[in-house]
Length: 409
Image (cartoon, rainbow, N blue to C red; front, side):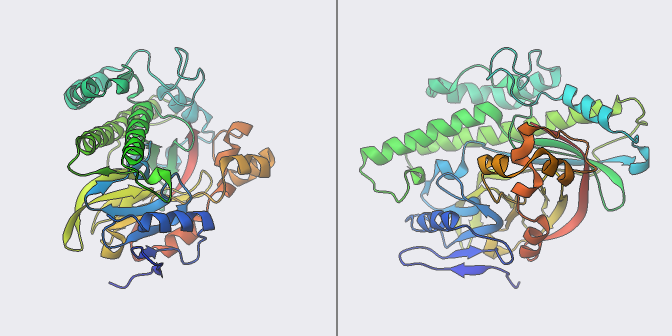
């Protein structure tokens, strides 16, 4: 298989293979990549996706394979964050001319945003946890959660079940989209919510404590690692795998509520969903076999794109998104990008763009057009078409989606 990457090599570091032709790689992100490539436990090389941009410790849009150690900050604090999509039996002609009621129904059905800094009036948590979420918690999550928290008592705040089925804030979203044949899809983006954040922060600090205790010099303190064979390493892997399962179930519960909300919206005819469904992580770690060795693959803002794997690559809230099928390119560790990738910070976007700019960029999309979402405006992201062109050897496009409704966290 021919590969479309560029090779970055520096002294005392593993190679960096970057799918960045036609897209920018900022200097700060390049420095982060080089720092990570110099860690002694990197396996073979680091792969860089075209949506790459600066992160904490490790760049967003990078694939970091390791043997004998793991970097908790590379996995990050939004553990298991990812995408879920389903196709429905609806078509564009079934949708009303005004989609305001569809957006309102979804906003009422799925808690989102933050209104009380996590307090009792915060819409980001269920107060009357739905029965299906309770059952999923008991069946798939409760026993393992209790075992983790019994050992690491700081992790137990008793609110994990309350966040199951909630969207969160920032770049998390729910969309109604039309594909190339005018068929209706539902698309959403979220992860393990506050409990995953808590797990991530806790083990990042434990790794930093280990580095200080052992006088390990690092090019960046956020590259602090846990060594395989240690008790902390084992506990972290258990916690990460739990949070990834939580994130997947969280998306499933939300999607069920989205389907029910739209089904109950006046003017929408009866329909079925789950005709095609995808549920994939893009901030996570997994044990995989690559280049003759088992390794831990950390995908920080990257999606698994093994041969035949279905994935989701969303654009910004005014651009196209894609359902893709992986080509299994070994050079990328069978990975692809997780989205368009930011071109600027949230602070810079809020300073640079106006409400009028945002309204024009999201014309034709039923969505919020207020100052609180300026940081998510399409101009703050890379051109999704350029991102897709740069990874044509990693995935093929199965469906092209254009959003008509967008609910932001």
